[in-house]
Picture (cartoon, rainbow, N blue to C red):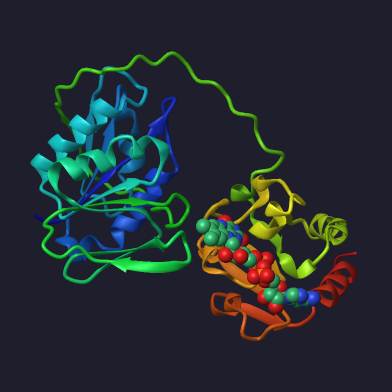
Length: 316
Ligand SMILES: Cc1cc2nc3c(=O)[nH]c(=O)nc-3n(C[C@H](O)[C@H](O)[C@H](O)COP(=O)(O)OP(=O)(O)OC[C@H]3O[C@@H](n4cnc5c(N)ncnc54)[C@H](O)[C@@H]3O)c2cc1C
C-alpha cells in the first residue's frame, strides 16, 4: 500500500477550511509515503469542490456522490471503505472533527488499520509518525504503527498549514452504493461568542502571571490600543475571569495568528498545543526557564507589567 488519501469535509455546501489543512499536512509526507496524493470529497454536489481541492501537489480529486449533501456517518463510512479498497493508501487523513469522528474510528476498527486521533504533528520514518497528547494532555506522545500497512489519522483542525496554490489534478467520480439511515431535519444555531480568537491576526495573550482579576482591564485596554485581540491561558477561564471563548490551548481554541504576544504564560504543553503554529511568538516572563521560551521567536525575561506599561506608552 502506498500514497496518501485525504478525506475533505464540507458543511452546508461549503468546503471546510480543515480540508486544505489536511492536504497541507499530507503534502509533508507525500513523497515518503510513495508519491501519490488523492483527495476525496463525499456528498451530493461533491464535484463542486473539485477545483478548490486540486491544490498544488494533489494528484487526483475523487468525488463520491451521496444521496444527501448533509453528513451521514453510514454513507461516509461506506465511501471511505470503498476508497481504501480502491486506492490502497498507506495513510488516510481525516479532520479530528465532529463529522469525521462519526465514521473514521469505526472504519479504522473494522479494517484493523493503525489509528490515532487528535494528531497535532505528522512525520514519517518507514511509516507514519503521529504526535498527540497523552495522559490527559500532560505529555506529548509520538506514535508509530509497526506492522500496519494502512494507518488512519485524524488531524486537529488549525494545527497544520493549509495547502496553497492551485494545481492541475484531474477529478474522477467514484461510485459507492450506500443508503442513508438518518434523516437531516435542520440546523440549530449555537449562541455565538463575543469574539473568534481563531480568526485574529494579532493576539495579546495573558496568563496567571497577571495574578489578579483587577489587572484584566489594563490588558483589555492595551489590546485595544495595539489593535490586538485579548486571549488567555486556562487558569483565567477556570477562575471565571474570562469566558472560555478566549482560551487558547488543548481544551480551548487552536490559534495561528501572525503575532502571538504571551505575557505571564509559562508555556505548559496544553497551552503550546493551541498556539505553537503562530507565525511569530513573543514571550514575556520573569522566569528564564519558562517553557514558552522554547517555542518563542522573541523573548524578554522581564516583568510583564513593566512591558505592558512601556507598550501602552509606545502605542499611545
Ligand atoms: C487536560 C488538560 C487540558 C488543559 N488545557 C489547557 C488549555 O487549553 N489551555 C491552557 O492554557 N492550559 C491548559 N491546561 C492547563 C495547563 O496545564 C497549565 O496549567 C496552564 O496552561 C498554565 O497557565 P499559565 O501559563 O497562565 O500559568 P502558570 O503555569 O502558573 O504560569 C504563569 C507564568 O507567569 C510568569 N510570571 C509570574 N509573574 C510574572 C510577571 N510579573 N511578569 C512576567 N511573568 C510572570 C511565571 O514565571 C510563570 O511562568 C490544561 C491542563 C490539562 C490537565
